[in-house]
Image 1 (cartoon, rainbow, N blue to C red):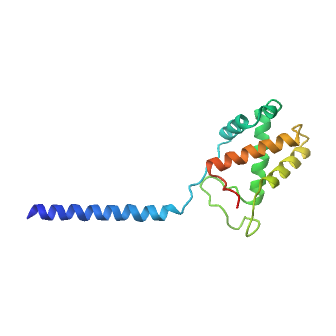
Image 2 (cartoon, rainbow, N blue to C red):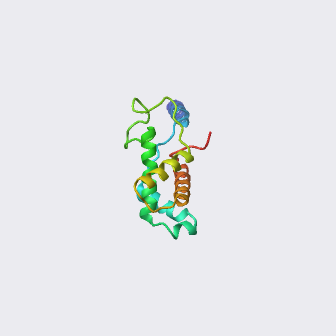
Image 3 (cartoon, rainbow, N blue to C red):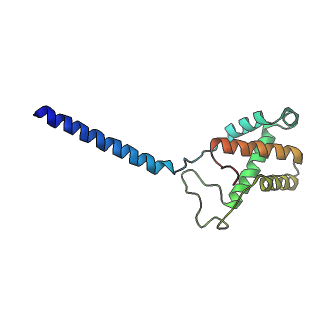
Length: 145
């Protein structure tokens, strides 16, 4: 008789465990894990992924400068948060904000002109394109809608 109770208890515990794990899995299925951007990693990956013709003319510091300009543009749009901070809220400029690569390139090129940088606009475009591809790879931005 004790064996029957032990087996029924084991079956009940197993059923509860499977139910709990299944429920949590369904809840987490719709959530997106936050992406963490490490500047050193981003600069290294972007510098390695740009074509040789561009990488021969720009340094890692130039790549970091362009990435910083793009991040400033994201910050102006309200897409940047501090670690652990929720995205959105009162500080977002509009109800719906869309970021595209053309806007990022325009902002970065204009910042380069303002600061008197000697990075060519074509090189800025290539670096921004590689950086956005990196952001897609780490899950920080989604695909085009």
